Structure formats: structure tokens, C-alpha cells
Length: 150
Ligand SMILES: Nc1nc2c([nH]c(=O)n2[C@@H]2O[C@H](COP(=O)(O)OP(=O)(O)OP(=O)(O)O)[C@@H](O)[C@H]2O)c(=O)[nH]1
Image (cartoon, helix red, strand yellow):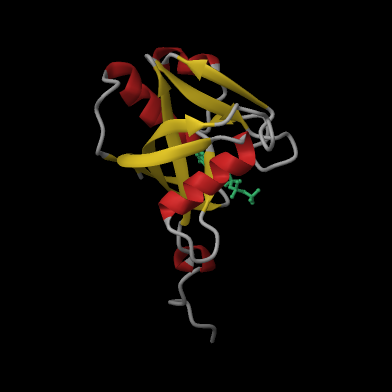
């Protein structure tokens, strides 16, 4: 008889660790549009990406912003940690406050970018994992530190 207690594969999978940048210009924040040929293509998100090899989250975020946008940033405090389950698996997103150090923003690995007021986020097709964060930013832009999602 087959063992019915064997955990399903999805229960064994760890969440994907992702870093994301909260870059602010006055009361606006930067969002970028995912390339059409990537998963969730065309949707809007905070710039960032997965950890690669042995790098720290801060190193990963600096690399992603260099690769995707051609900009250099200082990675500062954690703004939020977001856990979200997609149908393909879970993500754990470390969202850091970032400060622009240099470089001109280019669309190297993104389709587009916008500086938006957080309260306008519903005009954009934002990744589901990020929506509670934008709701929170709309209410209290400086508030940080919660672990959201589930
Ligand atoms: N960068 C980023 N990814 C997010 C956010 N929210 C969110 O759910 N994700 C998810 O986290 C995952 C990050 O993967 P990614 O495709 O951006 O990472 P990457 O740049 O390292 O990808 P690649 O090198 O495989 O092309 C995606 O599944 C994406 O849908 C967000 O705000 N920023």
C-alpha cells in the first residue's frame, strides 16, 4: 500500500527569497514593469530580484538595480518583509529602503518605470504580493517593519 502520510512536494519547497527596493522621490516611489517575456510579464513591481549564489540581500539588491536600471543605490533599513503564496510557489520578499547614489535610470531589464504616489497604486497592475505594502504606504508612508502576507 502506498504511504498516504508522505508530504506533498509543495510542502517541502522553501519560499523563494527575493529582494525589492523602496526608492523614494519626495512623496513618490519607483515601480518598474516586468518584461513581457518573464513570468508575470507586464505587471508592475518594486525593482529587485532573487538572491544569486552566495551574495547577501544587500549585494543582490545593488546588483539587480545595476543590471535592471543602471543605477547605484545604498541599501538602508528593512522597510517590510512580505510573504506571499503564488500558485507556482511562495516568495519571501525583503523590502529595503534604498537611496539613489548615481547613474541615469535606463530600461535595461525592465519594460518601463513610473514614479507614483502610493495612493495611486490601484491604477497599475501591481504584483499581488506587493499590494498590501502599497495599501500601507498609502495610509502611512513612513510606517515600516511589519511582516505582512500569509
Ligand atoms: N523584483 C521583484 N519581484 C517580486 C516583487 N513582488 C513579487 O511577488 N515578486 C516576485 O518575486 C520573484 C522575483 O523574481 P525576478 O524574476 O524578479 O528575479 P530575477 O530578476 O532574479 O529573475 P531572473 O534573473 O530569473 O530573470 C518573481 O516571481 C516575482 O513575481 C517585487 O516587488 N519585486
